[in-house]
Image (tube, rainbow, N blue to C red; front, side, top):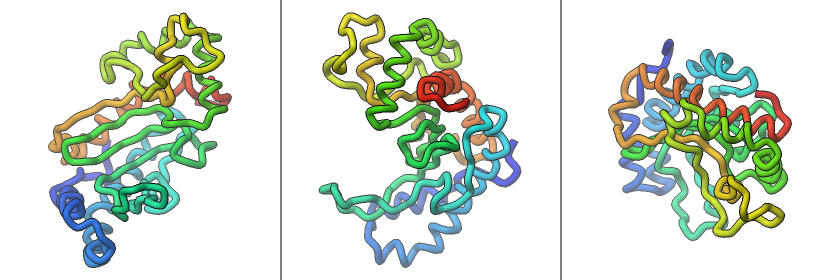
Length: 232
């Protein structure tokens, strides 16, 4: 149920359509009020309402309605080490991280808002090597628990399968003949639902859709938390 969130409307999408054509500081400064009123405000409303729902999924994840240092990803790109020097992101992003996590690489629930490219779910993206090793070791040590995750009805129904970019070759120290070698190759682990239907996000009911999807990702999230020694 949504108390504040009314949907991401045409003004929300128009901002991102326009910034794709005008990705520069002067244009952004000239349109900062539009950004605050039609991008930041509905995202804050979404985060506030999700904060009421999230404890029912897991009490260890945070919904922080702050545009900086909270659950909303910053609009500013880090272009220091990239050939792409565009200063601003051309999509919206929200992450509800584990309370012990300090960055985007912590396990979390995620929502990506881009016209024609929506995705949302849960998992862990490109964790540092120690954390990744713990997840891989858990798969090897508890194969039945991992099998229960990848065979979970909600995982299959909502996401088809657990995803995540992987190595071309088996990671060092792991048996290439292991039944789950394709999973052991992964550098990220996530259950993500994709949609190209922008109309999906225009009503308050979108919050309920995301809540159901986050719930469906819970078996994977619980496995990751267990592997890394944090509570789910």
